[in-house]
Image 1 (cartoon, rainbow, N blue to C red):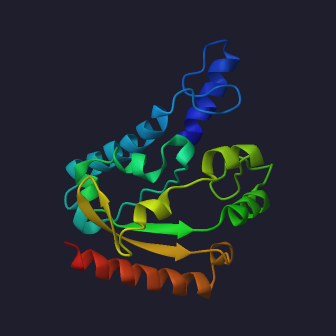
Image 2: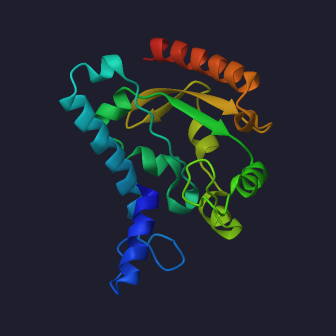
Image 3: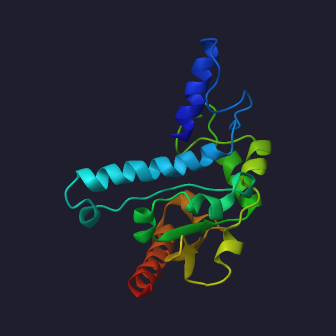
Length: 192
């Protein structure tokens, strides 16, 4: 959805119309648009839950996003989730230093496929501005297993990826992911 907004703005600009979401440098015109994305994910989730019989029993929904403090951080983003989503959520946080994130961003980028989910990239200055500073560790500092989101204890695990097991997609990734998901499931069952 985020990428679509930028594409639509480029089309509007080509048509001589004002951009709706972003400026010419590709930054949102207003910070609240980050939260519209969160609410849109919940809106789409709710459509599935209410329209597909047994959706929650038969499917797992993944909300994937990152939040730098420049646009409110995770603390802000989590306030825009619906209560229904929060009551059923668990968090798998992929942790990597900014320097490793920058390295991976540069390596991943394929100029022939800039809109690919797996080969896109951001300019260094944009990555730094939007994602260098994060509030996850402050948000989760009070408890090694749960974060309070809208008054609900949400289980979480941290997937350490400084050694970049995700790029190779081999046994190391599978083993680490399995261990994290097992811990997350145990915390889900034990949550209060």
